[in-house]
Image (cartoon, rainbow, N blue to C red; front, top):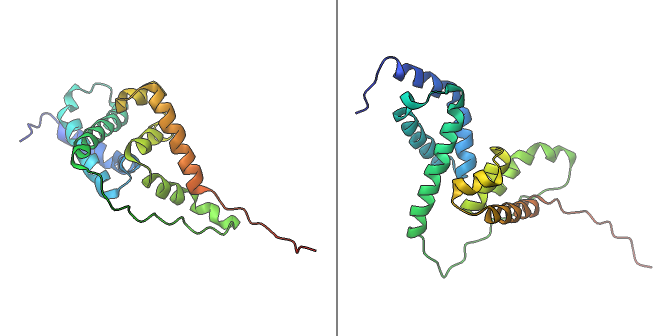
Amino acid sequence: MIAVTDGTHDEFREYVVARGPALLRAAHQVTGNPNDAEDLLQAALVKTYLAWERIEDRAALDGYVRRTMVNINISWWRRRRLDEYPSDEIPEPVPAAAHDGLPGRRAELPEQVERALECLPDRMRAAIVLRYYEDMTEPEIAKALGISVGTVKSTVSRGMAKLRGALAIPERRHLEPQP
């Protein structure tokens, strides 16, 4: 049982109520799965609560929780990697979303980006989320993911290429009759 002292519980509860939805969105960006995001956020909030008295800069709480989520997620990857084995069967490819190129389809772009991110491998998705959503530098990402800066650069580059490919709108070609 966690010992509660002098309003810590109320202050923490107010923080979670105020920032919970934004933190859940960040967790979803890291995991790519709503159920995993909830588990990740819960684990990060438990660690934050246990460290609450040691966190002096309350303005930096979101960063503390996000960093905790990334660290926990990395630990989960490492553990899960030991449980995953190659298979003789290749999974069915995820069909690309039909896109007719109409201007109204631009409103769907955030959802398409989300779906494309979910299809990336874990480390690639994490590197892209940390770089472009969390605005972390390459050295910060390398430290968080436990990889070299060069690996961060190549991982982000390959991930962005995959995202561009997944989000590409096919050109409409108008064929003229041959004489």
